[in-house]
Amino acid sequence: MTVFILVAGAFTGPHVWRDTAARLTAEGAEVRTVALTGLGGRLGDPGETVDLETHVADVLAVIDAVAEAGREIVLVGHDYGIHPVLGAADRRSGSIARIVHLDAGVPGDGVPALAAVPDQRVRDEVMERAAGGGERGAGGELPPPDRDGWSRWGSTAGLSDAALDGLTALAAPQPLGTLLQPLRLTGAVAEVPVTGVLCTGNGPGVEVLQILVDVGDPTVRALAEARVPFLELPTGHWPMLSCPAALVGTLIEAAAGGGHRLTVADAVRTPAHLRPFLLDVPQRPRERAGNTDLYLPDGPGPHPAVVFVHGGPVPAEARPTPRDWPTLTGYARHVAGQGVLGVTLDHRLHAVTDYEVAAADVADAVERVRADPRVDADRVALWFFSGGGPILADWLTNPPAWLRCVAANYPILAPLPSWGLGGSRFHPVRAVSRAGCLPVVLVRAERESADIAATVEEFLAEAARCGANVEVIDVPEGRHGFETLAPTDGAREAVHRAVGAVLARLKG
Image 1 (cartoon, rainbow, N blue to C red):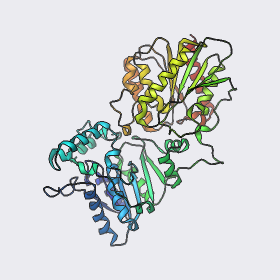
Image 2: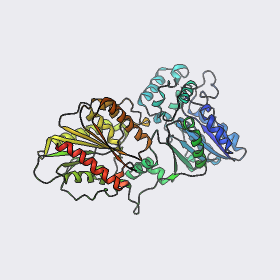
Image 3: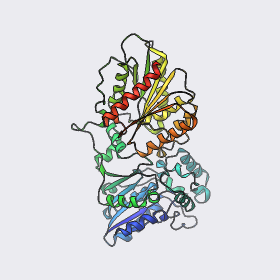
Image 4: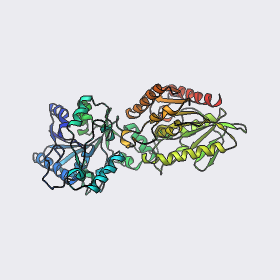
């Protein structure tokens, strides 16, 4: 019999697992839910410091009680819970059959749980409380979120009002020591099989992870090389409350070693982002200057220009760099063949914390392009892709007269919950009301990941409310990065329509 040991995340305790545990039991499994000290477990003795080691000990106690019977143990860590799970599994690696990271990161030795908290404001609050308080009382705990504050810890997609009310009512303060004390691992836990469960309403799914492997993200590539299986749940950050039945099926599959494994590109498999552009576009003259490439149309000009802004984050070590990726070069050559100067560029969006510097790179490139005598400085369009979408907010806010159009393909149009950038200026949903009559061409992929699709729908709802000038071009069966990933006739038609829409606004 498999024994599932379930460890909940920050502010929560065994109560969040009630429906999941009951359903697992009905499927014939044994279930133990760990009551972490201060979070549904004992309160701790007066004067006792509750830290990560306290919670590791809580998990060890349950492991040891179960291991005596010689049963197969599957440890499940949700959110913060993965930290005590890994700490305990490192000390009992021979007793654990598998670790399941349930919408949780992959923390390493010496890393505190605070590093995984997405919201910078929360991290700052923790440090302020740690500096100003004692080991107990207000200075030693982080108060739980109010009903509207849970989204700072992860997407609440899929939660009913009743579930959100219950989550709030039963939440407990999180002892600061559990967030600040570094995780200590000897390396033994590396021998335990691992499965990742991705909640696609809160973060990337398998398809996006594969893209990250292909562009060279070292953390995700290591998971691919280790052949870690991944499973998806189309919900937010609390699947035990939003879809317990689906979660049970996923956990049972995880325990059996099922799931999709990422692959590392080799001589046989070309990474999706480096496959040929879906249109057969002739070569054009190209000039390279600094971080920009100009694809030149026929004639002396001045010509209208389209600046193509790649997505990301893209690791700094990625080769080739984005301005040489077939999607960007394909579009640039395509518009150049129709009398418009196409521009690709590299910007420094290497992490979600880099939007400020990436936006500055884009703004600088645009000004250099406009200063080129072959460019009509009064007729420029910007075209954003994927994770470059948040930079669009700068151009929606009081757009200059020379900006004739903006376009966006499968864009992220609001910071994702796992980014912790909710208060950032890089939030096109909030900016669109200031766009005035600026034309926006939005290319929407039908099979977009849930978390990104949610930002697109939010953007369109706000655009409709404020009367923004938005044209939507849908790609039937389209996926993120469809130009090289899924070159269907419908995708080709969508590209032709999108290019036509942008150029009509540039030339009109």
